[in-house]
Length: 273
Image 1: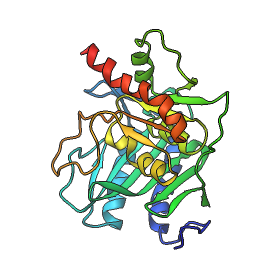
Image 2 (image 1 turned 180 degrees about the vertical axis):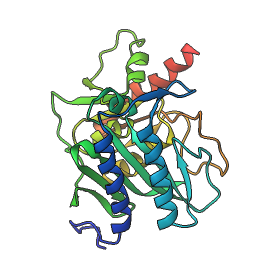
Image 3 (image 1 turned 60 degrees about the horizontal axis):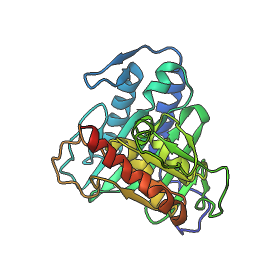
Image 4 (image 1 turned 120 degrees about the horizontal axis):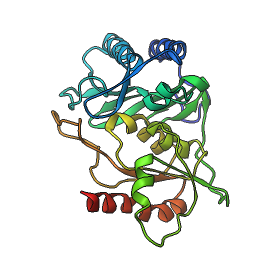
């Protein structure tokens, strides 16, 4: 497929059908699910559980031999050349609270890097797909990179932990308006979609960022890992407690403006421990 093609290739039909089925059932579950608190203090619902199982079983059927990392399942780096990183329901707090904004995030890795990514936003019926070296599509339409022009009303997307940490940075003017979407993958790809000019995530897990990572790269958005680099993690590495703080922006000018704030995330996080 030419990298200039405006249309998604058709050989992903079985995979997209799997995501279609999970997204549709999540829409049906929305508003009818009770949440519970996991041992790590985060929320989980029955929708998280069945979504994880459905995706795990479907990927094993479609891609036999591939490994799997997921928020609700195995959290160690597999020993297979190819593996999937899955967040079956990114934004559980939103979902459980009746806020109609969450995502399904899946990415296929080869040699420790994402080569295929899908972020589906069930309540908006939007799907973003990225293929390494080929580009990014939203609802089957090829996307270009975000605008390079400055907007005086430009917004930055921050997770709640980023806001809490950056409040401890004295006498500094934050360079943009703040938005917090409550969904890590969507916080990050809001930059690639041109909705925000920068995003900061203080404590994302590998399943939060796996798909967004490739989408950002394919649309030319600069990013920096502020602590651990998730690329080429050794086989068997336990990722259950590993965070990958990151800053990204729509272009190099914005990136340089927000980079000090990203670095402050790690500095101030260390001071609190």
